[in-house]
Length: 279
Image (tube, rainbow, N blue to C red; front, side, top):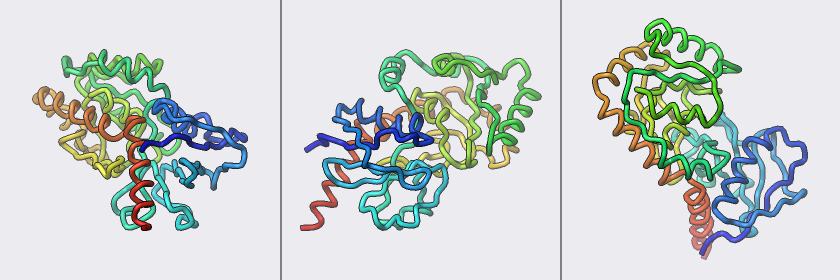
């Protein structure tokens, strides 16, 4: 049995409606589930909102930070974007939901067969704006890369699609997470989805089906302070086939956990299993 209808909050000037809400709403549409907007379904706090999945109340928490709402226990199904093992696995009603990746799933479907990472040159990608909590970290990394790699580093900010096409002509992408230095950021997640090898500090985000991002398997881990970043890049130059394999592993993980079909499939399974356990 699959989900037939999701009642979703209408836009009541919610701050993140055109970003996090839209990502969830677009995934519903891509999974071909009917989405009904309703003014009585509400935002909870600044970074969470309710939905009704075939009549069952579900909370979506899109915060970048690990804390759950004080009234977390009021929700039988609490799905969190940046679910982590040490903070959330002990909470029986909290489940992982994939953080933001794509707004336009048709673009993803079209480009996933066109973008082909091959580690075919020495270009290092680092196409992230230094801002907010990531400002100093990203500026530091950009300085390291431009000082060491010189003409082989690309830090330019381009259109969304151009950003993706860069994957076809690079060695690796260095990704500095946003609000937290251990979270899976949107740009890195998109690059993983398209099969690009990435370098970042250890990522604590756990994906749906409780799948972990494993260093050396799905990405290359560098020190939290980026002190060994240049060594990791030199390793990539000497191990291009391994980089391609890491990219393929990441692409497979995304496909198996974080597409709309997988996202709403696991929510459906969670609700069915919980309902059965009552009897």
